[in-house]
Length: 215
Image 1 (spheres, rainbow, N blue to C red):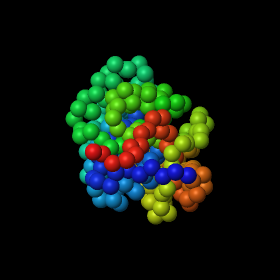
Image 2 (spheres, helix red, strand yellow):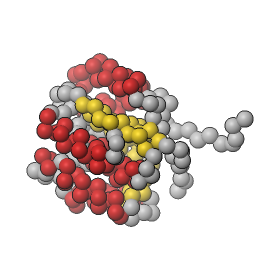
Image 3 (cartoon, rainbow, N blue to C red):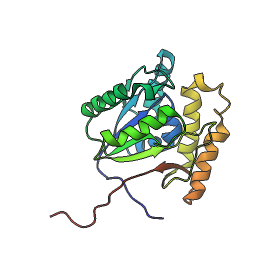
C-alpha cells in the first residue's frame, strides 16, 4: 500500500459538516492524530444547528482540534438541497475568510443523506486547489463502501474519539446507532483493511503528487 504524506510544515485544515457531530463521527480520530502534531490551524463550518447542538459542537471542536475556529448556520436539517444557492454562497464566503487549506475534510459526494451529499458535491467546486478527503458517516441507510484512502489511528486516539463523542454529544446518545461498538467496529474494520489495528477510511476523487525538485 502506497503512502502519501501531508506536508511537514504547519497545516491549515478545513472541516465541513452538514450537522454537528458529522466531522467527529467521520474523522474524529484523524483530527486527534493531526492535533498531536501541534502545528495545525483548524477552521470548522457547520450548516445546520440549533442552540443546544451548537453549544455541544463548539466544545467538541476544541477537544478534537484545539484552537479550531467555528462557524455555524441554521439551515433546516434534512432540507439543504432546497437551499442550494444559499449553501453555495456560504461555502464561498467561508472560503474567502480562511487561509488556503492544505486539507479539506467533507462528507462523501455519494452519501445517502441528502444534506451530506450536497455538501460533498459542492466542496470541490469551492476548494479547487486543496486536498479533499471525503469522510464516511455510518447510518441506517447502509451506504458504506470501500474507501480508497486510509489514516491509521492509534489505540489511544481510537478510544479517545469514542470517549469524546459520548462526552460532548450527550444529546445524541438516545439514537440506536449511537453505540461504542459501531464507532470502534468501523475503526477496526478500516484498520484491518490497511494493516493497522484502527483506521479511518476516506474517499479521494482527485489527487496530485509532484515528483522531482523545483527549479
